Amino acid sequence: MNEPEVVMIGLGYIGLPTAALIAQNKTYVHGVDINPSVVETINKGQIHIIEPELDGAVANAVKEGYLRAATTPVKANIYLIVVPTPFKAKNEPDISFVEAATKAILPLLKEDDLYIIESTSPIGTTEKMADMIYETRPELKDKLNIAYCPERVLPGNVMYELVHNDRVIGGVNERSTERAVSFYSQFIKGDLHKTNARTAEMCKLVENSSRDVQIAFANELSLICDKADINVWELINLANKHPRVNILQPGCGVGGHCIAVDPYFIVADYPMESKIIGTAREINNYKSFWCAEKVQTTKLQFELQHGRKPNIALMGLAFKPNIDDLRESPAKYIAQKVLQNANNEEYFIVEPNISEHRVFKLTDYRDALEKADIIVFLVAHNEFKTVEIPKHKVVLDFCGVIK
Image 1 (cartoon, rainbow, N blue to C red):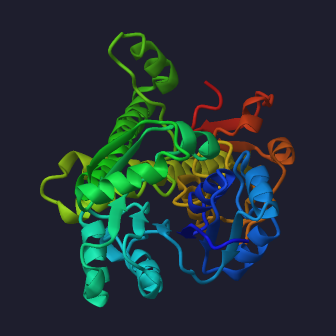
Image 2: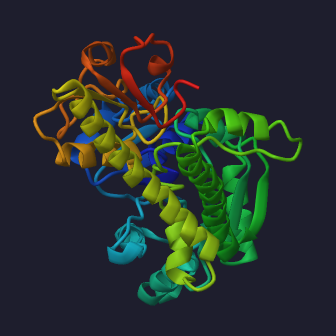
Image 3: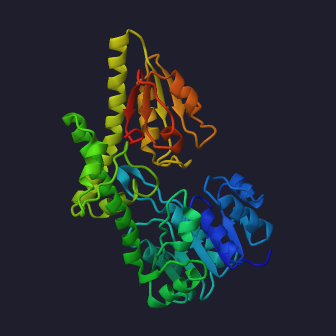
């Protein structure tokens, strides 16, 4: 492989597809991940995550020599930071992975290099990293191009959306913005919208916070409708007939590493101002707790009515339908909560998109449906929508499988 043009730090759900996309455009990419098994898998032309079309893209990129992976970075002209940004205690964002990735490339940077953060970050992170770089490498002061460019992709359709979705690109100065736009324009067909780094950081957070607020409204409706003995799915369908109403579908909470997380980046820094955003997070978190309590109540009712312990199927662990991603999954939280209160009932845990789990013993969904007395739909996977459920089964549908 020739000397890389791009170093991609982080080869997860966003980093690897982005690396593969850049490599598809005949650009040499050096991918970096701290997990040696991930590096080994990629260098075999294989993938460690489920994402349509990604396997072929990685296989071809590795075979043609445009993509290789390692545990350490090398010199290049462009550095992309696509690492996790988890949380500390009290939902405070943790940018230590961004800092570590930046420190790893500090000795490699040279004049006119392009440094881009794609990781979801608190407002001001890009400027903070620029200060850190220049403090260590003062000879590069104002001679680098530093920008922030968040992704806007949907798991399950990443390879398409990376190319076709619009992107917001914000540099620490106008030159950095222009240089980043020039880079992304090589492989993105969507419009590239120029701004500054702080606005780009806030834009990412606002997009997902907006979705969280909308979902919270739907989840709050589902709680009200349960008490009012109203079918929430029918209600929302009818309300959406209004030409200016578009209520989302409720679920068992909100998961994933975006919508369930990004609002906290705003709330942590602006607690007094972000009233609606903070309350939406509380509602969506409470919905998961409520679902777990509903399972517990239904279990006790069955036992009183039938004089025996029920068999219970928990259908789905992923944070959304038809993917293998369990990050911040409300379904996984509910399963854990329910099992904590287990009292000799038999549970069947179902997740058709993964073959095994280190905590849960998984059951085929058809076996679970056959053996269970209580069927709890947590995730609306396609497999669940086609099954016939005998009328004598007790069904708790938290995600609209049976509308």
